[in-house]
Length: 301
Image (cartoon, rainbow, N blue to C red; front, side, top):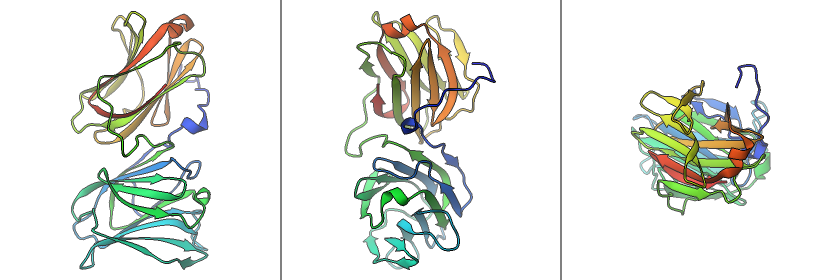
C-alpha cells in the first residue's frame, strides 16, 4: 500500500476506539459512538499504596459547568475501616440513593484489570477476571458519551470495545483454533479475532489455508523483535510499517476486511494497510487458523 493511499472506511459497528496508554489523571475522554448494550470498557492500572479513593464516571457530556449527569459512578474507597465500592447516579445536580458493595476486590499497592460490560438493563463489573458487582441503570445508557477517571489511581491503559470480546461465563478457545470457510472469502466479508496476549508472548499467527491445507497468506506478529508482517506461501515476509500494537496482558482485536483482490487489516481499530491476493485465491480459501501465545475468546467469520 502506497503511503498516500487511504483505506476505505470500515463499517462503524466493527471499529474499535483506539486505546489510551498511561493517561494523566484526572482523565476525561469522549466515548466514540457513545455506550450501547454489548460495549465494554477495559481499565488496566494500579492502586497506590496510600490511596484513599478513586472514581470512574460514565458521564452524559464533558461539560464542567453545569456539572453533567453521571449515569454510572464507580467509586472504590480504601481509607475506611471496611474498604468498599459505592455506585450511584447523578441527575440534575443531585446524587440518587447510593448502592454499596463491601469486600472490595481491589487492594492498595496492587495492579488490577477492571472490565465494565454494558447490558440492556445494567452494567456488570469484574475485577481481575472475577465478577464483582452489577448496577442497574437509572438514566438511559444512550445518553452516555464521556468517560471520566479521577482520584488516587495509576492508569496504564484504557480500552474501548464495541462488542464484548468474550462471554464472561464461557471458557477460552483452545489453540491452535480453526474455523472453516465453506465458500471462501468474498468482497465485503469481515473476519474478527479477539483475545488477550499472554504475559511472556513469543508469536501470534493468523493463517488462511486452501482446500489442500496450504497456507496462502499469514499474518505473523513476533514479540521478540516487535514486528508485524504478512508471510507469503513461499515464506517471504512483508513487514507492516506501523507501531507494534500487541502488548502483554492486554486485549486485542484483529479485523480483516476482504475486498476485490486484497485483504485489508485493522488492529485495535487502526487501519494497517492491505495485502494483495487474487480473487480466485480468496475464493479458494477454506480455513482460518489461529496460533500463538494468546488467550483466544472470539473468532467471527
